[in-house]
Image (cartoon, helix red, strand yellow):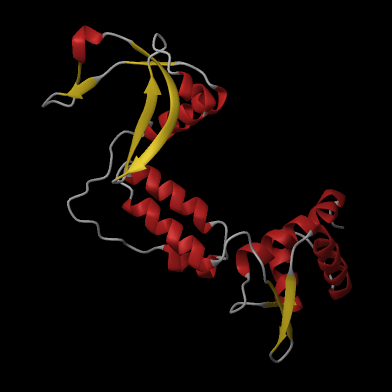
Length: 209
């Protein structure tokens, strides 16, 4: 006898199967869907699958069917089209401020937004000359912290430093701490630039931004 908890979870497992396994070129028949559910220890017949798909459609999952030897079903609409995901992958791979490790992690997350079949097309290489990837894993989080500071009009503090030949930090001006009021982040030549003002300075026209 099937566990009652698995019966309750059946629609969610069905949704995962449809999202992960199907697209327009790779639909699944009801027999194939039942077999995949059985691998999870969940028994289902055609009627229960029909009922569950109807509920998923009410939930917002767009499921369509196409005829071959039998009717097969697939997810027809997703938050991102494949072409859009390819573009985002290219941006991630070519951005020098994103490390190789973080790039792979981001691309894996983008791949999870489509079927496993279309995800294979996202494993592509963009060759960028004379543009090494960053080694600092925390850059993305630092940029996000700056965006938050801008939106909340919070002051930030930081120190300037350079890397020595051994990769260590050499702080400028004996490690003096700078205090600034961030106004915006500017993207240019694949780099972020912070637009900020000194808290001691006052420019009335900036207050109107």
